[in-house]
Image 1 (cartoon, chains in turn red, cyan):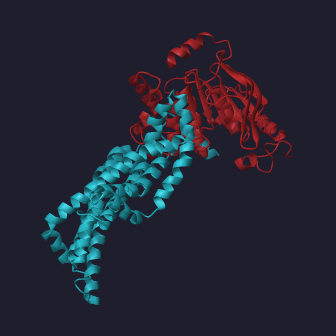
Image 2 (cartoon, rainbow over the protein chains, first blue to last red; image 1 turned 180 degrees about the vertical axis):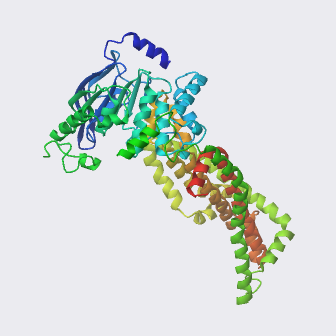
Image 3 (cartoon, rainbow over the protein chains, first blue to last red; image 1 turned 180 degrees about the horizontal axis):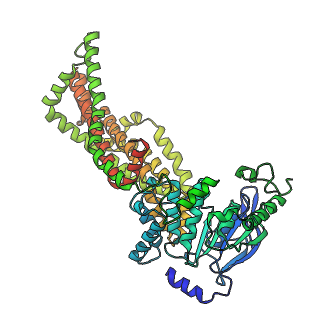
Length: 286
Length: 294
């Protein structure tokens, strides 16, 4: 099913794959209303790797929930292939910050679990799962329970699960957020390898400016809450990108622009540039 | 920074796993195979050690404080009584065992649907929880005579008492277990196309098993106590009844012998649940061992 849909989608390539129009989302608690996302509009091309960078609470995660149809917007709409998203879409892979592996299933079964409710032939899925595990160096760990895996290995397995059925759309919500810096670097490289040649459209949500630039075709910068797009940058560095690209002036120019944009918005203040705790700040906080 | 890059570059080709994540699986296997027998021996030894220590202290206490036989019999006399009265003890313990087992099974059978109700209905949670807590804090010893008056000297009031005592820990643990699922897991399941029912059976249920079994283990030992309380208060059969009779004739050896058998029933039922857990929840078992550093 996943494949036939993606073939159908390829036929109408020129149209934007996803169109987000005037999307707002407010959450109502007992006595307060939180505006998580405010009239956001943008489009994705098919096969585009799009990152969203912004401070905590700027509605990045809300955006992912809305695009996947797991929650419904307060106003506005998400259209995939011209069709409005009204209920959870299933032609998708999702990676959250938590790996969310099922502790009671072996690594490989965690990955093939993706097909359990979609009626994909089990042997085909399994073959693909073995391939993916091999690509991320987890072959030896196919038949162990997740508690025997390290944090980075678990998240790698989780990414394999999200793409094993070759969905046209991959949504990732700070997938490396819980990992240490070196593992994050490795994960960034692994993501590129895994997605090579698949033509998957990716929405990648992150706190890390350099990770966003390293991986993306385009970066959307979100301002302080309620979330709005404050800048948009095309990253036309050649692919495949190695970690060393981060030392090039071109790379630095892009990350520099994002950083200064966030500084302008009062999201980042100079006294503590990358400490996540310091990212909280109100709009007029300067 | 330079080191980070070098590391990243070094492990790029063909993606050998990161440092500290080398393919150690075969090694893990062999260690497991070799260890299990030795571990079993060690575990047995660890179980026997306190029993032996208890015997020694027991003997010493009698010697040092010159305790009368009808107050505290010699351990070997208790062992002798265990052997001589084995027929009687077997008969009585069979009754106690049945009462405990039925009470326990009844508790499990009622606790599971109640726990599911508690998980899925906020209204049910609000109305049922107070009843549960009250049923737990009312001392069972106090209502045991009432139950006997109402239901006679047969097995029914004991089964009911076993049920009442075992029910609470099982229902609370089952409900906790069912709520153990990471909320985002439900989103993930829905994005995979799982229905509400599939989310329940394929995600919520399996993830609840470790905590569920923890509840069963507490519950099963409680069930034995419940049945015995019932027998103490009024019965024609059972180990509790036997103890009361033996106490009345100051047959302390028999009292001690039946206490030993009571404990054995509790241990046996506990072990049975633990074996079942190893069988059904191997992933939880191995995780626990790892945490213990075994």
